[in-house]
Amino acid sequence: MAANYDFNMEVGNLFEITYNYTDSDGVPINLENHCIFFRWLTDTGVEYKFSSTENTTDYSLSGNSDGSIVFQIPARTNQAYSFVTATYDLETVGPLRLILVVENLSKD
Image (cartoon, rainbow, N blue to C red; front, side, top):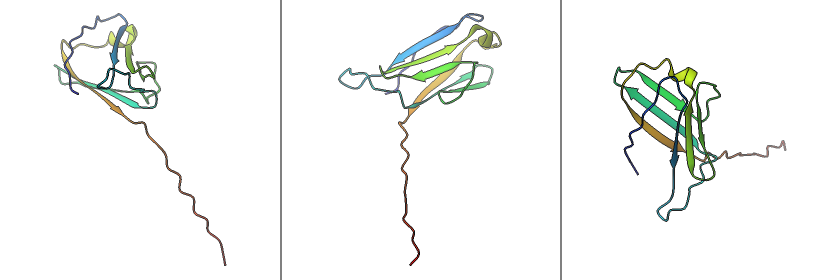
């Protein structure tokens, strides 16, 4: 389901936002093994991409078993931002499952 949210980010301060995902009955959806992608396009035309699979100290993005997605940008990272507004997109993918196919090859 698509939704629009407005939020403010103070440059030079920790930015944190939490989204809560629930099913149609209001039960939290377990996002623990999902890949979370967050992207925004600024009014200056710069695109920023964030992923829960990225190992970085520039931000933190995680999907959790309680249905929450937590996104944090530390003060040292957002000090470099120079935009006024941005449009964002948030996507969840998963959980991913690996299927292992084993073939028994033998010589006759």
